[in-house]
Length: 361
Image 1 (cartoon, rainbow, N blue to C red):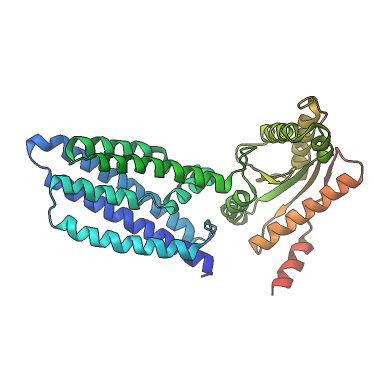
Image 2: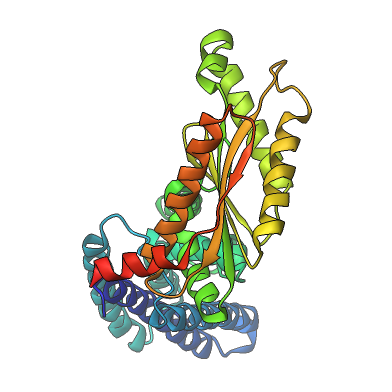
């Protein structure tokens, strides 16, 4: 198993372990609240445990995908993430000893607070965001804020609250919001709200595996705004930003929901398209080009040049996709050389893929 795959599986294993312990803890607390006057509290702890059980199902799905090698490395420093989660698991195991000792009602909430704090490690939200953006997978992110708010409401009602603990409760909400924001920023271009380059390459990994298994033909478009520097120089960067945002919108409006669109860098965009041939790819590229040029943007006439290619993924996924990108880049260069505001499409030849695989061996 490659190092990246091993580390991803190790990180996922820690996330699963923490959620398993959280479910066990909340089931135990529900058992301790069996008297009639605590029926509401018992129901609450069971609801919390059910939430964690759904999280466990989520982790099992992600781990299954990771074992197939389709989860990319999502962390800048996986070694540090592993060490942090390993230390967290040690703390959770120590906490479980106190759970087994039938803690008081007030102590239960303190222990639960610590668990919820551990569950806000950024690794959790990183996977939540990735699965939602790539697989449209239902995941804990959608309901997690309500999960935390419900916990804080019951904490206030049944726990031994103090101003300091109330402040810590607010910290949970802020940590959750911060983690969501950071996960989004790491994969999304803030200006255009498209995927950024990193988000694009992370997102296509499972899609490439899927295309390889299904023997689908893939399309790649590289699109570059013509004379963008002149627009910036003549009209200023604010107008340049407005052009980028509107071009991104017009590109996105012409492709399918299943296609990936990203800001590749500067004034360049990339589109990854599933299961389509040369003729269809040419049509889509021209639709995008004409849509961009159809109306002025911020009183500027804006055009784009498009480099397009298509082909299968049969061998080494990363290298063969890089071949497609190289073809598209060469086509884009040719479109610029021929006068801009045009599409150039060439099909990636089988011998190019074979040559790359030979270079690997």
